[in-house]
Image (tube, rainbow, N blue to C red):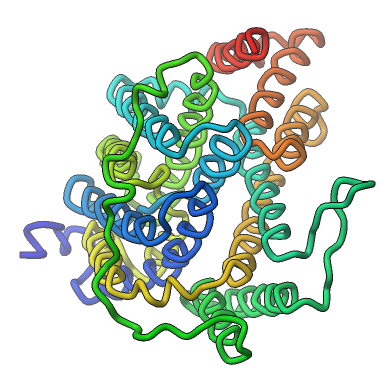
Length: 429
């Protein structure tokens, strides 16, 4: 059955290898089960329902990737996109989480249209590499700032806006300990390093009496009713949401496409001498966004952690299928998710943020018209507490600097179009 579904022999792999690869990928990305409810829960959404929607959205995305595209790519609600959803759209802009889910749905529809028409590929070719890299790095800085606040390392200061918190508090000490555990384990190539770090801090918190142990480790999943089909699409249909939807689409385009291509190349799934299934994979991740918005979570995307499964030999959709099954089994471990404190997920956010900062090396620092817009993009995000503002400043400054320095040929129509949309948004506000 597996041979007929996934063509294992053609890809020089076996069912056992695919299962091991799927387990490896799941362990490296399972932290999202605990982190996503913490982040989206700040909007007032029911954390139990978010836990369920996270697992279901991840499973659906993985199954579509497995059976439609036959690629070994794990899918789940994306880091950065969930932060934009919670802290910018709902927290800073004041929209309801129902409206934010509606924006995710609309962005998913646009995403499918862009993919089907080939515009998505045109956008990827047209957006400067420096801005693509700086968006990833900027989201990393944004996540780091959130992690530092959540842990109490950074606190509000009346004179300087921010300041150092109480380093002797148990929240800060547990965060620091968890961070070093995660980094050390990942450096030693221990599978599931981030997940182990989260569970380690949660266990210590219980042992020291700072959190309460669950009554049981296994239970029936919580109700998904509080978030299921709660999206407010009509509330999205106003001009203010154009900015929100634009950012969702741009980040989804860069994040998912870059991950898919990067992991697929590592797996040898994109040979130049014969057709590949990139188009089907792009369609799979587009449909997963729609499913996630209906269930009740932020945008679902391809995970770079899938590279760990590819490294273990995963070459077909059977790897993704195993990941999806494991996410479904995770539904019965909701009591564990319920006792994970914020200072247990903060180290994970901080470490993921550090990994995202590696994108800065892709920027041409010798050219100010590339380096300055890239720097603005990354810096504006944490300082304005908004991913949207960072992207807007980056695109506008890029176009302006290229124009006034006479480097017109460096500008692609896609870049000009995105910058113009942001300028119109600023002008009307």
